[in-house]
Amino acid sequence: MKDNAGSLDGPLVTGSEIARLAGVTRAAVSNWRRRYDDFPAQAGGATNSPLYALAEVQAWLDKQRKGQEVSPEVELWQVMRAAYGEQMVAGLAEVAGLLAGAQAAGLPDDISARVQALARSEAPVALVNGLTERFMDSARRAGSDQVTSERVVRAVCYFAPELPTDATVFDPACGIGVLLLSIATEAGTRCRGQEIDADSARFAQLRADLLDRPDVRIVAGDSLREDGWAGLKADLVVCDPPTGVTEWGREELLLDSRWELGTPSKAEGELAWLQHAYAHTDVGGQVLMVMPASVAYRKAGRRIRAELVRRGILRKVIALPPGTATSHAMPVHLWCLQRPESTESTEMIRAVRMVDLTDNSPDGDLDPRHDQIADVPLIELLDDTVDLTPGSHLRARHRDYPDEYATLREELRNEIRRLAALLPELAPGGGPGSLDAASTSVADLARAGLVSYDGPEPVSASEQLDTDYLQGFLRSSFNTRRSTSASGSYRLDGKGSRIPRMSIDDQRRYGSAFRALSVFEEGMRRVDELSRQLAELARDGLAAGALMPEE
Image 1 (tube, one colour):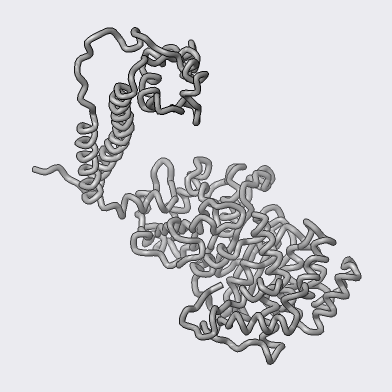
Image 2 (cartoon, one colour):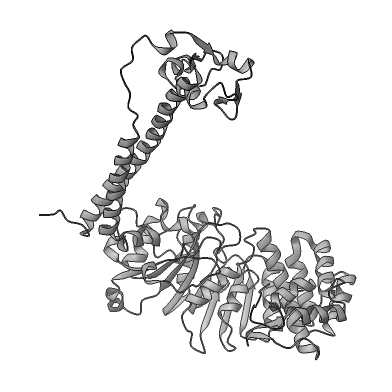
């Protein structure tokens, strides 16, 4: 909930938050606003994102008893979930069919009665949209990739080109049609889709019918093996293809004409989908493909990536923020392709635009900053790996080599000076080794209650024993030899390790030296890392021309 400190009426809430309060969908809240004259008036926000006074909303929910009882929409969803389980899409298709006036013989009587009762007070399209929203939300919570996530849909819509009024949009793996219907919202835009799951295809078509979109046609079938739209040429192809699928039909499609950029390997099913999408673009048409980040650098796809670059087909790669996808937190990419209008136009393509949004919030601004964009010349991409990962190309271009070099150099100097001061002043010893004199085993100290184990190493449990003194002697070569096995592995031997007997004042004196040596060792590890970073930065800066030796 959003607390508006400037409001005299207290906190304000959005429509989504009202839906959560009442246990209904956002579509149901929108329906209440239209249906009930006494629904609270807008108290803030914009026209397309209104805010309401929480106190007024709670009072209205109490009056309507929406807050005390489960709404009919929620009851319907719960009954459907019990009846269909993992086959919920089949249930959604049956409900949509009933609302569209089609036969729904497979729908249980209880669900049918509830749907018909709700349809008397809600518009069929609002009811179907509400159920769709619930289905997408449950898929998101389950980490399922069954439907394209709202964040991916938002990103594709944001980066999609402006379409002419009579454009054709195609999605060859459209699922329940979320991405296709979101990208082509204007009536008159011809939408064509295909989906391998028959229930999903049916639901997508029925939902489009309820939305009064006669320009939408979706067929069932395997797009790669049985293309239901052979010959179709679209102005825009959008696709969130299945990932990690090796049985996509490579053996039976080896000689397919769609592989004009190269035959994809069995492990590169995503590049088969990409070429299928590209084969359906008209001259000047574009493709927006949602791709796993690994497709940008995997060895098996290098040849196809090289052809995309060499022919001027790949125009842009956008690395979306982690968390954009539903089923995992890894980054996903959006590949933007365009079919060249002529050989001359191909020759004019000199670079691929790389956009790296991986540092952004998945719900944040999609408009990239200047330092998140780089136009990478084709020749730089056409190396042995053909890595299309935006981050690998942006880091070198936007690094401030002189400032980084100066900062790291100064940090290394300061660390070395600090470490030199840390080294304890040690005087020559006047006798035999400390452990050759009177000593005590750690086992005896433990039995006497002077030592306890708080982790792998013993610590002092008494004011008679200094911990740094104890651990310092235990780490000496005299004791580590006792604790090292024949295989070379080190394991502290509590029985065999010994420490000299000293007064507590002498222990603290030795402990202070041992402690300084431990800090020194840790600092040297930091110096080693700084040295490596500094040398690597200097080499790259010299090679890139951002640094030069002083005369």
